[in-house]
Image (cartoon, rainbow, N blue to C red):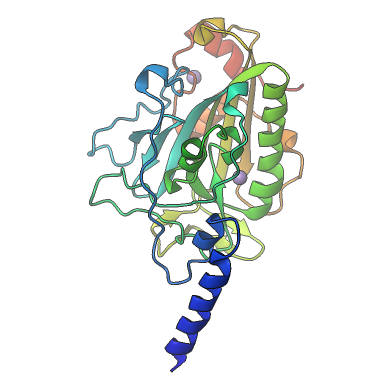
Length: 296
Ligand code: MN
Ligand code: MN
């Protein structure tokens, strides 16, 4: 009886929604708990993949045995995925002005079916009612030239549980600032990740994990942005005066709204994570740019 009534309401809702113009809305109202299945998207070819030009910070590999440091080359960005944390260790990508198009946000959060068959796959509902946002590492707004490009950012392997005020205000502030740099003649190499365990939201309280323990809530999110004037041979153009913006933000709702509050050095992030960020840059140049804290 009760179930029938629910089914009727859902059927009615589906019909109403089907009549609206935007088919994406149908997906977001899926109420029965089944994951959304979207076919894999076609990424750029390896010849044009510029996502790891500055290095592979943890030497992630495509070997299935490397389950805590598993390399996913999505074409639009690359990931070191950690199976047992259910989140990326880091995501690395390159943004140039031609990555900005007119494709709207697809919002098709979904499992990454390219993970090894027997691995648990975090899906679009894994964060439901947790109090945490599905926080992008490579942002949706950096990949708007095609539906495939934008959809790629909604794979849950590009997502971490992020405190809402962190995601929507302070972290988003840095994402927006990066966009202003690109719009004024820069190209960016960005590496972004999450480490530690335990975040806090005003609605979800303190959590070390969600999704029945299958997704770790990181204690911190970090980002490193290498800023270059538009050009070619990018790795060779990094020098001791190249601007590098690095931040570490605690994963909670009580952050200062200004992302600049959280600036730090690449060296600090390397100490915290054990990674070698910008490893393709010569050691001498790394020493100079990784010890500096941006103050522009
Ligand atoms: Mn976000
Ligand atoms: Mn380094």
